[in-house]
Length: 66
Image 1: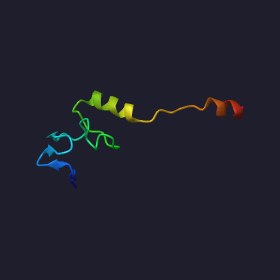
Image 2 (image 1 turned 120 degrees about the vertical axis):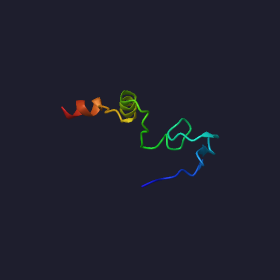
Image 3 (image 1 turned 30 degrees about the vertical axis):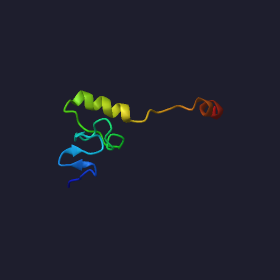
């Protein structure tokens, strides 16, 4: 299965006006749910952890329940 970007024109990004590199800054795919590999496992792991939502504790609700 393949995909194409509406801004890609023969490997050139018409939106950013630079050679296409999926996931680069300014890329519409950067804000998507996908994570693009950098080729470095540790950097990819940090990027994934940074993108995951942090669990927040509602202390007021916790206090009311006890």
